[in-house]
Image 1 (cartoon, rainbow, N blue to C red):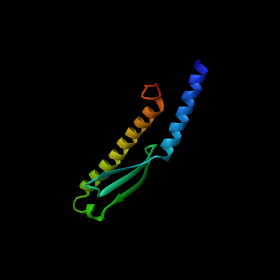
Image 2: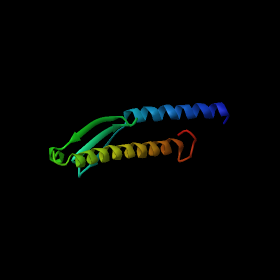
Image 3: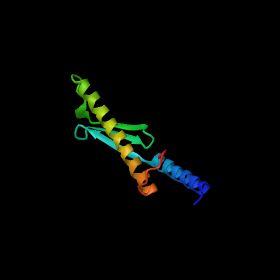
Image 4: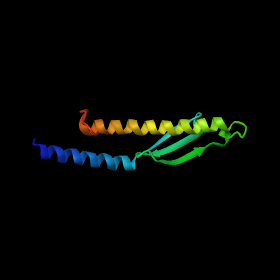
Length: 98
């Protein structure tokens, strides 16, 4: 296989990944599901749902912590999904830039 073919194949894999990640939606939760954050494959927060029971005007800090935890979990799930998809496309080979 020559270098041109290899580069073309790498570009195709990158385009496939970008398409898959654009369609990806993951959900992170916290507080036993009281806060749910939905994130795109590009790590854009696209939705958040807060259960009424999580809202305590006397403990705003706890709600803030629950929101952050749900968002952070969603971000980790995006990373895990990306790693899994890259491994699937490359057959487990480590390729720089992927």
